[in-house]
Length: 198
Image (tube, rainbow, N blue to C red; front, side, top):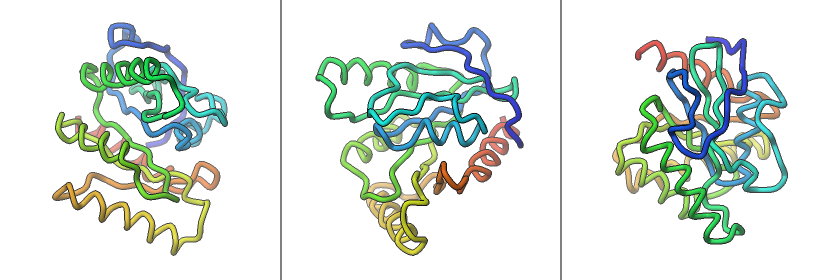
């Protein structure tokens, strides 16, 4: 599969406000500043589709992008941004889980993690909650160009082993770089395979 067309289709804070056209949805989420918007722009080949920012917590809405007129790429707010006031954090959490729990068109959630670091407790909790709710997901380690191949592989493997302490088997794992395009084709092909199986 190739992404030839990507169009912004609307923002929402609850499922009832989603675009009226019902199509399969592949959503992207991660901690603030994990490189989510950059990855979305890389996947779609459009550097200005998702708004990137040096300021964490920029995405505070559920943003739908219509891809190839046949499915939606969904940009979710980041989770676990500590500097937001409690009320704002609670509001974002509600927006995120309203979408995850209630969107009947959600096919798969890509959970983004920074490949340079150990997973934080907030990541592990979020992933555990997906497991408890039976939400299909894949893991994406971002910023794969920021360190050498050996260090990168070791860090990703360390995070995999940490997850295997809680999980019998892991979902698909991707390593990406928005700057070099690493992992881009693998994710697009995986989405294509999942779409073909629906």
